[in-house]
Image (cartoon, rainbow, N blue to C red; front, side, top):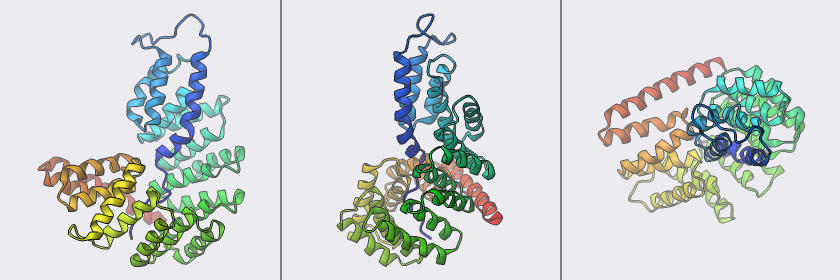
Length: 366
């Protein structure tokens, strides 16, 4: 089954909606009077407010590992401590340090910051830490404070997808649909989870529901394409993608699907369809560099052209965005092998083996 990334929000989706608010908080803090003069880090001499601004800027760019150091430098030394600590929790989450993220978020929640944003990120961290019941509790609290915010449910659903927690993801969207029964996006997510749980007959109804709720929209076209993909009808899926693009729905997701489907259909470098796939994927990557599905597909395409250096660049970007996606590693291992970097190639195969074992264990539980 072709795994397409439509609507899968990488962590940068969260950053886009939250970081601006945090930036404004930090800017307000910078303008506030600070007692005892300018606040500096006693150990490094770094201006704490400057460190906070640097950490926020790095977080907004998705450079989570790099952002941790300045955010730690600012910790306990800035007026707007919430902005610093929430960003730090976000960065720990983004680097897979779920326990550290959880501890910070739990502390924020118990100290007058029991907000929808805090509980929502906490729910995602619990998903990453394999604590499903705590994730549902945190999401329930987030939704209690903002019951009509569709993104609260969508972000946690995306976390479930990233960690192959499909049964949990179904619970998440069902919770959301109680408050938002007409949400095309949540019905789409529900269809995807049902499909991944091999309940495709139920999923078909949800895909059709999306088209009814939001006809002629991007998500309606996505629902049609995904339904055809799950039926293994790649020829019809390709026809639908081209129709969507012609109708003006050629965003980065649809372009990514076009390129990915063409590759799955077995186009070769000497065929005109191969050039069509390359053009679509390059346009998708340009439009949304942080969309992992496009980066991965473009890396595979370059590898087919024996452009191993360029393949590695895009596959490594895909890996940084979606490190737990097994589909990356065979191509990345092959690319490194062609470049003569055998240790890196073996490392990729080792990671792949671990991910497949983990996925098998999770599937067995479900």
